[in-house]
Length: 241
Image 1 (cartoon, helix red, strand yellow):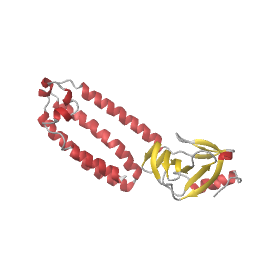
Image 2 (tube, one colour):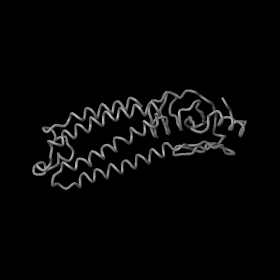
Image 3 (cartoon, one colour):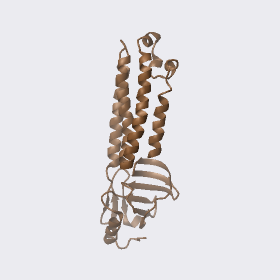
Image 4 (cartoon, one colour):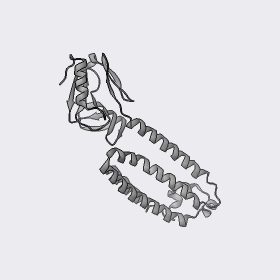
């Protein structure tokens, strides 16, 4: 998580020095579509320092807070990485209204509404992603809850085992990944796999099916060892590696 935090921090810092009075009519969104008369009513000289200082502060605060949170909780750092820039730019656009003299602010209002809706959407995704997916042992199957869960009949299971290592993940093809949470389909050194990882607690439970992708599961509140023992007790005929 440190690399994305530092990388975005550097990007914000570089953005602070891109905009000048000379290139604003090409690079500054909104300003580049104004007529000459509208540009005369926009206080560009005052806006440029505000733009620069905002992005410098965003860069420094983003890295400082992000690194601090990452040392405490990688999940908290992931949430911060997703939410903080959106909130910051909502503030930036709102404060930018003061530089528009005598000009309707409908464009800025619309941008704030769009960013606000994006923030709500992101928070909803985070809420769904961080909700713990559980594994329930039924009379004839294992049921994994959640968006990437499934009901796996015992007859379709080739083997179940514990492992301290995940296969080398090369790419997420469909799913949710943030911090310790990984849910969805991934390409790996073992081919395509499904991960339902509510945490990075080891060992992981590996469910190998007779057909389809192997599943790696771990919960937050219950260890994989306990789950495996419960599975053994419910269906002794299953192959436990």
